[in-house]
Image (cartoon, rainbow, N blue to C red; front, top):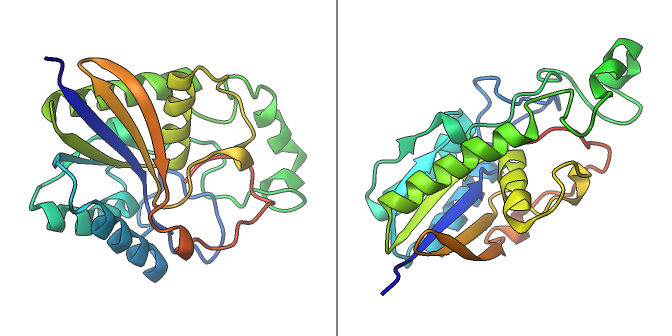
Length: 216
């Protein structure tokens, strides 16, 4: 009989970012109070599931999101560099339409190739590392469930690859809200379905339509 395994990719909760910079992989960006509430909400929503393996990005916001989930299941998460945020040359800068980094024409060259993309880690590289991490989690949770806390862009890019979409995209149209769960169901080694849920939907802040590059 073919075993069924589920691997959940969770985006971290809201981050305290009063200056509105693209924080990317910069250390010392932590969850806001709202972000911690989001993490608690997801922990409550998954506590009845058959989760036997946990994985977190090494960034603080991801590990803080994982804390209440690890407490619920009594598990110690693996820290996995493969599920870290995508590298981005605009890290540490404000980025938006009409303000921030794009006010400087020298930054425009970084946007020359949206296919790769030229401003950050290649999409195909993100797909490879995320798929490798998902496969490791599938193996470790075989016949049960695993949960990985990662970041918006890596989650959306690997989902797009799995579902056969083009990787270049409009970031405003990603289906990957804060503290959301993107879930891959495997029969044996094959993905048979992809699910999406927003356990903390009522806690989501109002979106800023001006921000459109990068992840979180």
